[in-house]
Image (cartoon, rainbow, N blue to C red; front, top):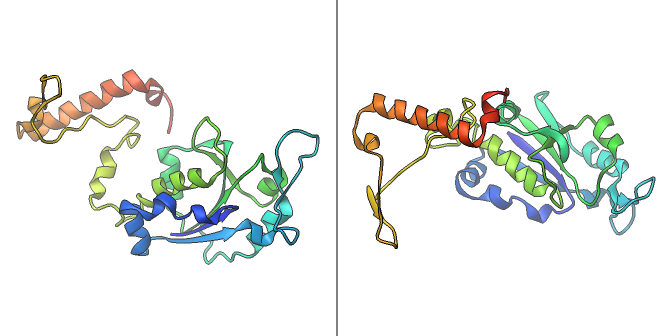
Length: 232
């Protein structure tokens, strides 16, 4: 996958995308990352990209002509691409959405800043509006890294154990079952001993699968009952 980022702060990349399995995928060219500075397409010698909002109000808005010039500098190499603008008012990101996005060969992400982006740029230049949650950040850079990590790990060959994708939270509308590792008996600082559930060390694979399914269902009903009702 080829990823192109439009941002006012290019130094924020690759950020978290340079570490662990995603960092390995970048180094091994499972995906490429091109970061474009919006200030290079500013309207004056200072590289200004924003202006005051019509109608008044606080903050500044990124201009549509700046975004258009930046977009025109990019040549997509295939027809299988998407353009994304990250905003709290966008469509909520879900695992299903990540699965769909991961199938694109090219992805362009516009990272907003200040009070936002001129709506004409979003509509006329055909950006998908996506939100990573019902909260507000100072810009779209961290949100872009969240979305990209979710997508990149779904690319075949990125994860060392791809079968783990089948049992993750949201993969089947359930939260993931709890995990345990060594020591089998853990004594906390109060001297209380906590043991791993016996079924997990029984070696009985069918019982283990049944236990995990039951725990996933109970956890989902307790913490996210909405998942059992909606289409992710």
